Image (cartoon, rainbow, N blue to C red; front, side, top):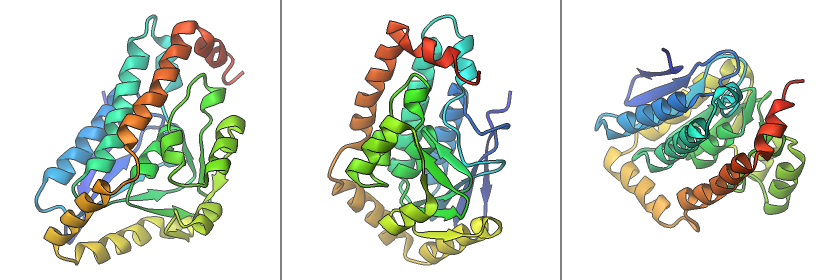
Length: 247
């Protein structure tokens, strides 16, 4: 069964990791783990200088596959998704080389977790970023959203589930550039090639040093958030909210 994750090598040490899981790039637990594996393999390859994380289809990533959660009679699916998301977000953050996220369309929930841990974000003009978790019976990735927008906007976005645009994030400085949708992949690859042309030893050292001076532990912070998601599932509140999803 396809997980919707593929890897391809571009020239000059640039590796593309691509999400393509129709209809909306909402990943199953297996998909999240496959994404983590692909990112780790790319970073472990000594020939890799930069990773571009992008997607095919209508949007970048719609988070977790709600249908998988609803079809599971016990808590194994939510445990698998929690661990898969944590692994994928950590794989972006821990990748020994810079990760450029190329974002188009919607970037929701787990998508925010990915781009919030990326080194650089390039977005198309139609890209939006949001956490609809409270409308889905979950919490999480506020850790990563807070790396993209100011604190009080992050809180408002969590409470209201309303997204921010690429233009807004560009104004905050968290999105490197905003380009027409048809130019997104090439813009990301151009930036990747610019970084890849530098000394690979120095760039890998730079990535490690930048992670080392981060003001907070993104992995621990996210796992703390996930504890509340699991609590909501145990209480049954999450099922009640998800049962009404899509009606």
